[in-house]
Image (cartoon, rainbow, N blue to C red):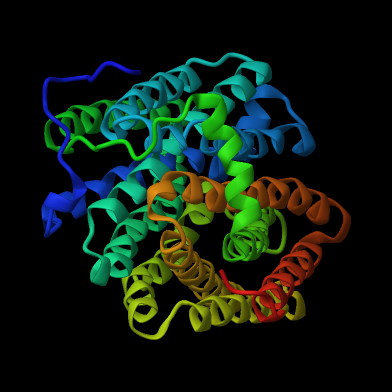
Length: 401
């Protein structure tokens, strides 16, 4: 990766006084489209279970492995954005993502599903190269708001992916979903190659030293540790909900199909629209109040689910509120870490998002276990405990960096 992909000279970020709205939109679309690949499998788990003859526990490995692949991709690959031209890193990972999506469409066994899921997860970490790219190009006074716009793309991708996947799978088959997704990633790669500027690396460290610096950054910045831990708890609640929702809605008293399970993403998408507002508020008033409010919304939503587990209207309203809480907290946590050490933004972001997706991986596994042991009320109580833990992490006194 030492040779440039094109002859285009890197553009020093300091020379880009204004990040164009078109480039912000492109980064938001890229972030949303690539992170969506992580969630196409969730509304169709029931279909996959029937087709491959897998038990709920076995098929539950698919979203867990996808999240683990993403976590590994963030920790092992995202730091390359500080060492190499971030544009080149993004393009290479987009190609790998397209390959993984097409491979998923061709799978013929549960083992192949698992392998393709890991590849998709690792390559989809390209979404977390786009976010620090926006933070690097943005003027400092507008960084929170611009990152919020890009993160809105990411969050909409997470939520609307379920709507699209559930509907396409029900109408045309689940393999069609992955073929279409791979085709869109190929098209995105061509657009990004033409429109994305090159970046000047901020470090010359060898890869081994670059990975070692992750531990140094983790020890050095208490703000990073608190942000990653709190967001990890919130993400565990988020993932426990979304990875079990389709199975819960498929059972009595609801009896809904994959399209309805996917449509719940529309409720969560409303919350994603508030991401730029959360970034703007963090720019003006500071991020700490946003992190605490987000945790409170998650806690209250899941307590309500536990009290009335069969209320459809409460389920819809709570989905909107807890997604808003998770997303607003993420924007605020990114505002915190991007101000810690500008030359290490890719690595700081890797640690934050690594903590977030480690929480998601745990949430997928523990959410499935809670559903099997305690039904939907068990999932809700587990997620409420995660929200409380996140709130305590933000409230607990700690030294400031």
